[in-house]
Length: 589
Image 1 (tube, rainbow, N blue to C red):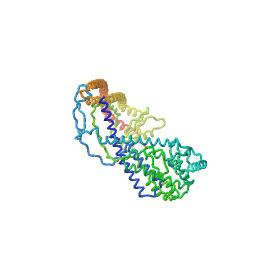
Image 2: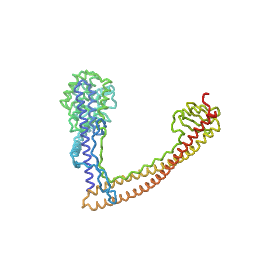
Image 3: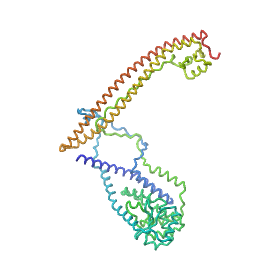
């Protein structure tokens, strides 16, 4: 039981350390992009609010991508210096039932092994604890929002309802509901699946019809832009990276740019003057933004702070004069997102990764099947194809014996007459000759017959070798399967041995159980070893048979060489006799 608890705690600390490492990398890489977006907005203050919104949204998304996605490695750096060679030490293998000393390769390092309780693990645990602490206020905010929706009433005023429907048609927003909320709320859009707009009941009387129209238009702009869905990314990034000031900056700037984009939409759709809309913002005043994850489901018209309200008022005049972003801006934004969201990491061309293997030594890999010796083809009469040595003999059964190229074969076949099936074509002294005499052709075929017969025997041996190779491959597959099972058993033996090493002398019952497990695993390992040996013996037998066939192939090859030399001398005498007797006709005469 104690061993199980220790293992669980160690794994939890390892996970916490990994989380802290991922947070650190994502914070650094995402923070760099946040700074880049901040500089871009600072140097180009007239960027349309819609573009600024997307820039800050991409910066927030980059923080989440860096936390959830493994980096794409770019091998641009020079390869690292060669690491120190591994030292081979002799250790007792837990997988060996006799305790035999088996050499294993391990990396000897001067550095001490890191402690289980490291700073990354502590930081990761504190981060997880801080996230849990934030759940309570977030739950309270969500309950308040649900309470406001529960007691909200549908609109009964005909004029207000007609204004709402006209604006919904003009803005292209359907299935949105207008509700009158209780006192103490500000105008806001809520709901992801059921979009609704809440109007404060105590402020309706203080808003003129023009101001009310601007409020409704602003909230419908949020719904048309999909801000309730898009707002998840900055809100989650701000909560997960609550310790990162740049993450807080990115979420705040996104909210400001989003509200400015909706303000610009109101001015463009209704044609109102910036001064009139500014007076509306001052009338609505400041309504603190909900904290925690409850901010995901709302988008309010009122500003969350004085600084926020001041900056929105300053941006109204620019919004009234700015044009809608043209296609070029959106293309540039797409390229920016493509390169900004992929977490690249520049690494060395060849990263050395050395793993410390303390498990039992893996079984020897199965011997690969011996490749069959390819049968030798009958050698041509001449060992080279230099000019004057080419010949082609076309037999009646359609086979061709030649020394030369396929051009020579085509040349010989072109010289076949109508109904003619046999011909001997050769080149000598720079001249081409054709022999059609049956006796000469029969003598030429007789010269090549022994080589053809040997070639058939070599082909039969090659087929036998191929069949043996197939059987060797099948045995190799069985050996590989057994090797995989041996490796799994070795890993299990290593785990049990590690458990044994952690137990103290007080845990006698646990130690006995672990020793019994080790014995059972050892017996299974021995059985697999016996099966592996049996397959090895079969493999050796096939190998010996393969060697015997190879020797036969070599003997046939030597016979082929001897017959070739004899046939060469007889062939030269045959063609010389055919020329002298006029049986070889010169082509073209």
